[in-house]
Length: 348
Image (cartoon, rainbow, N blue to C red; front, side, top):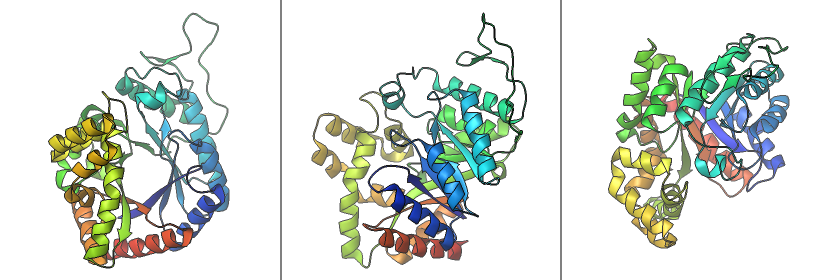
């Protein structure tokens, strides 16, 4: 398996610490660094800076949220970053959700599946150096009725920039298998992976491809416990984080994370956690999260446990494991990351 991590340009750490983390992670042998956007710093600015400070590491947008930029603007950023990094850029796109797209950016979240399909099509046109012309339901270029005519970008074409999609719903997963080079997954439990792979494989088959044509990139927190007592403490500390994903990531009616856990066998618990969280009982919601749920979706445990789980992830079909190393300091995070990288190399 390849190894990856995800950082943000802003958040709980300074950008200087984020930079130091990425530079040191490259020295440790990490393969890919994804840069998240969410509702914080924009991804392309951070990626451009990291491109200048790294030499070997692949750099990806994880993710640029469609709807916040025109498809051609996305293609411009991708071409620029691929050039700046010497061909080390991966374009990660995702639909985000209505809270961010509508609540923060003021853009309708309607037709996310159609928007994703049309965005990918136009991005590929622009990156290939073609004159952009597309008459879709969410994207219309040139704008009808105006003075515009089809144009191409003046930059050097680069049609080979890999496109990864961060998707969770069945139809979005099928689209990923059909049109993408990679899948950025989350909320992944290998024992329930059919909830994802059934739809990815259907999309791959529709485009005449197989799983080997798609890089499956899955992420999880990694943390090492010295013994079972420390492990119990770690798991207890993660329950509220998982409860937030199930109950707080989204609105009262739209939560893709809750839906994903439900499809993997935890529908009743996920619904109960969501109800408690939306009702304001955060502690009660966390109390409903089971140890099995925390351990199933993370790489937390003793070294032997983490090694075994990595093997399970590999056997389930994960090509690239995206590691979120635990640690209160930069040194602690790098120590955790180094241990995890060694285990991935052992597992193969």
